[in-house]
Length: 511
Image (cartoon, rainbow, N blue to C red; front, side, top):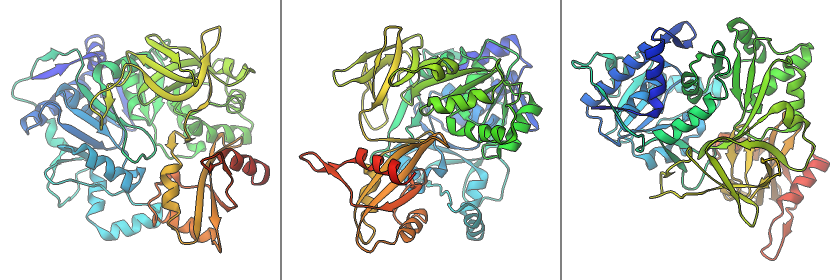
């Protein structure tokens, strides 16, 4: 028995209207809507035959592509839970999430599995990449290798074996999508990993809201490396072309021009290399771009002004504000945001279905049809979600952010919680106190992470080396850009670290 719901229905509708529509261009490979649906049904049927049960937890560590989509749709058809975890997030961080999830199934890139079995390859890999992603595989888990067939010694199932056609093609039974299907971990490391559980219904509402931003031009092509944006493209009935994530601005711009990419989505850090390239070459971004969407991190006006200067006037800019617990809260036209000269950070009007209330301390609370059901480590959720953002709503219905309630640094699209790392850093011999501070950099349009250390006879280069080599368990996204020594200032009756004073010192003396 396989199930259908609102998240899967957009693909089924596309198959009914345009079965041969190419939904994904994965470099030289393509897949049509009907092929994607049929393969997903095959994968689901074969997983069920191999013992997949309702509510089984599945971990995916595989590249974006058709296999990812097939796994996603198959697990949803089986009413299982799927968690997408990046193995390069830091080995301890990754292992903590696996131990919390206790998955029954793991879909792992075959190259990662092969690498775990060969010390010589690991040595070569470390010489090139500095860090080695390690996959924690718990006893009893069913392991499925995704990608090229490689001589892997560990017992596993090849993903290609799940393509076999079932003896009986099952009918899809309609499900309201209330079962918890998708686990998305908040970026950054917490003492207890914060897995955000979404139902198919609420994640489907997010996908629909995001796809509504794109469907003004059904001929536009989406360029992305983000797995969730493939689902958004399908919901909008648009073709997706996958690009490589870590390519130079020169290569990316040539690719955008060649593939006639019309829609791009990403955090400001994705756009900055393109802006810098265009500024250096005195040119604009390709004219094929019809729409740029920017989200996953604060979008500053100074960044937008530089982006606008290298865009053609016909290119639409949409800035989004959201979070893992509720993917889309507000949107605003980027050119309008760039012209805003009021106080705070204007993030625009609420999308349909979202409500907010402002607490006495200024914290924004939200509820909506997109809102997650609960955190994985907790038994139940709440009607209103505390965002941790401070702000207000103006007379025109725009949400204006004024800061964060708790200490947190957002670098690229990662959340960094300083207090979680500072005690670890103080284990380094000679360090009496440590304080991590984020300071916005106008050149990179991103947060720079500074580590202030206090102590005697400190060797800054040695501290940098120990942290980068992983001797003190600092995840790579939290590694400081700069380390310096100072007498760390304090404030208040509780003698807390005065991070504001440190940030002001950095702005005056170190930038």
